[in-house]
Amino acid sequence: MSAHGHVDLGHTVAGWTGTALAVLGSAAAGLGICLSWAPGLWLGLGLVLVAGLVTWLLHLAGWGKPSGPRPAADWDWRVRDATARTGHQNCLGCRAGGRAAAAPRPRSVELSPAADGGA
Image (cartoon, rainbow, N blue to C red; front, side):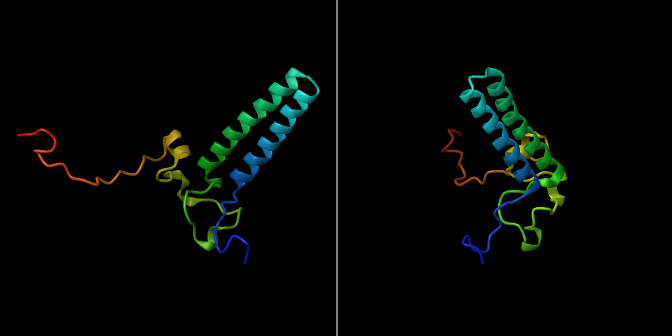
């Protein structure tokens, strides 16, 4: 058992790829700053933006994971998410890609006609 208990930490192809690209972009931008080389700074920052786009596209292609717990059989980072085609509920990335709508919010208090100004 790990120090984090028996949980899925979300290690996915999308997560690993995006993180690797973002680290490379950050390192390139930092090197550009240290060397006072403006094109290196902009190239690095561009790579960080590409990392976000690649991560989002991989998530939409099923190489990410939905929010919340997953079955233990799906914890391996090489397991593709079969529900990605329809989108994940309450997932900003899926909603931005036109895949899923937000879950309806429960109404905590029903308004009576007198409470909302009705007759």
